[in-house]
Image 1 (cartoon, protein in one colour):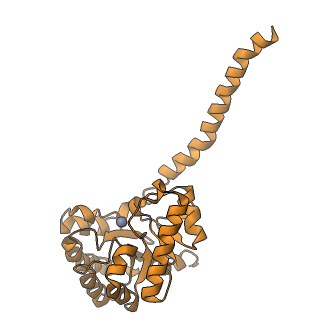
Image 2 (cartoon, protein in one colour; image 1 turned 90 degrees about the horizontal axis):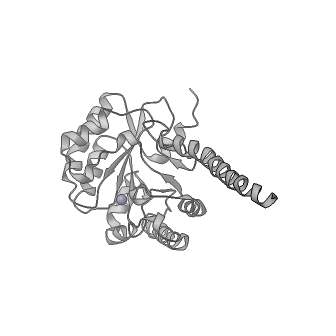
Image 3 (cartoon, helix red, strand yellow; image 1 turned 135 degrees about the vertical axis):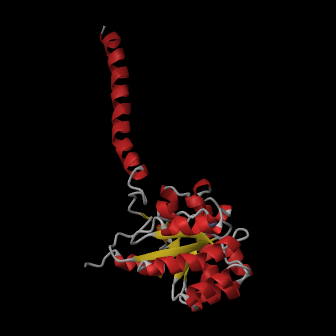
Amino acid sequence: MVTISLRPLSRHWRLIAALAIVAIAFPAWWRDVHAGSRGGTNPNLLWYVKTSDKVAALTFDDGPSPTATPKILKILESHHARATFFVVGRVAREYPAIVRQEARAGMEVGNHTYAHINLKIHSPAQDMEDLAHTQDVVRDITGRSPSLMRPPYGSYNASVIAVARHLKLKVILWSWTEDTKDWTNPGVSNIVSRVVNHIQPGDIVLLHDGGGNRAQTVAALPLILNDLTAMGYRLTTVSHLLTYASRRR
Ligand SMILES: [Zn+2]
């Protein structure tokens, strides 16, 4: 009799346990997805920096490119702007002089993996090997190991974050309102307006200097810099932007 009466009860408790897990996990997931228009809330990742200072970080992924990157450096320098280049290790090894030029111009060089891999679908050991290899490549070229990593495709999980932390790399994403989608070649005016129309203090802007023909990005950059400067913004590296997070006004 006892066995019979417990059967439905045990099923009931399994359902309650399942609902409890959903109730605990769901709000965290919901918060992360709907944290705001600019980014999520995971403390291990950075989408933007909380500051009221008019300062923002332009970031360029997938380079260096012999056609686009030197032009981008020249434009940044002429506007007294600094930026962060998340380089692909394999490409950096092919064009070390451009990476050296980035560092000498006061730009920040970040790690964007060695082979532009999706870190989430590889093993932690493979991720470690790939990211560490890129650290070595950049250090050999510039004399400094990167302190920032941007996962290709913005793809990450807990083990990617753990591997990055082991290598003393901060994981940097981008402000959701500042995704220019420049890699789709949407037109110069679209790239400019996607940045300028949504800019907020502390934003991290996603652009690309490699991975294809970046003529539109190169053409958009002076217009972006002119507009943002006229709005009172200073453009700096992600590491410098991070120092604003702790500043009190
Ligand atoms: Zn990329």
